[in-house]
Image 1 (cartoon, rainbow, N blue to C red):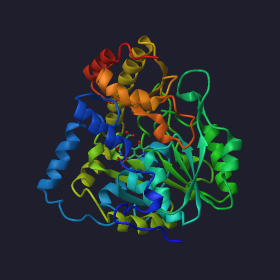
Image 2: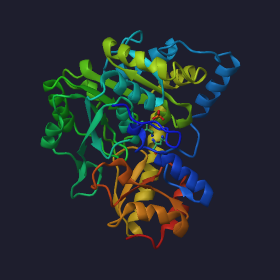
Image 3: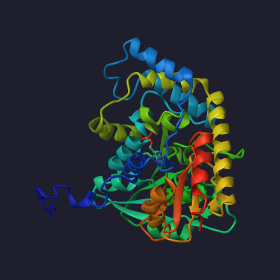
Image 4: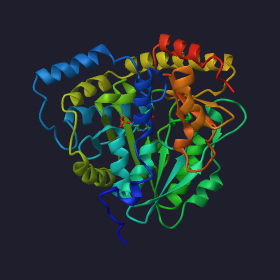
Length: 393
Ligand code: PMP
Ligand code: GLN
């Protein structure tokens, strides 16, 4: 039965649970209260100078009209070269690579391409918020599998139960959304975990939508393993990346998909009616940055790892129960009390904004966790730590 539409609440029922994203809400709160924003995950420094100059030049050189639907050829080629160089994965730049309006659009279009009304999509909780909104947009249903913290104290200790994943898969399941390295836990899924997911995907003929935007933001010499590198998985994986994270330009919203031609075509069909295209001058600039490969990543990675260490060590000294992430922009603290209440009061009592992790869960498993972003300048992290004195559990 169609949902009722009214002028008072014109929003369709399936989107009503979403409201305003927590990131927009918390960034606005940070501005309104003059707080330090450790909520939304964006770096407070710009990407590499050369990259910025390349985008400015691209505007001057006239890259200001609609780029081709699948993305400019130079960028598709650079993405293909990147995947071969970093992962020995071969994708044809013509037909197997698609440029999108950030990873958000890539994941949304992929979900809408493969999941129909009434179908089911499995996500790990905590989940990145746009996944579940996209599942709702598709009219599909989500099934969540919980990552739980085990003793040991770092990101490796977030684990899921394979039996729980198996039980979440039904005859209506079409896809699993996997995010590794993972926001908000900072977990890098292990090869054994990826193999277990791959085995179930093959057994049940599922597509894996692999959001790998933090692929290069991995610490301590660990390595990100793309799902598509597992035996048999290239054929059923939509691999998603984003320049926002790899080059610290989150506002540019240049993302991409790499997948077999049939899957890329399916995603493109949806994508072309979401935005059609975006970011004409940014696409050639990102192509050049991708082509340069390691130096950019190493610099960004080294800086972020220092920032992680600074925030985590500082929080631990203040008495917080910190889960050290293996990757990403985010650390988690267990407040051993309600995280929403803590985050609601924090701007007023300490002048700091953080995200209650419970917004990334359907279950109550994340009620006491709080996410803090460390992709901020040293002096900002130090000032935040100073302000957080006295609020540890
Ligand atoms: N996926 C994850 C896991 C993210 O954390 C983010 C944003 N930080 C995105 C997707 C969105 O990426 P984009 O800005 O490229 O749309
Ligand atoms: N992905 C970023 C985060 O997790 C925020 C992106 C957004 O605001 N949508 O904080």
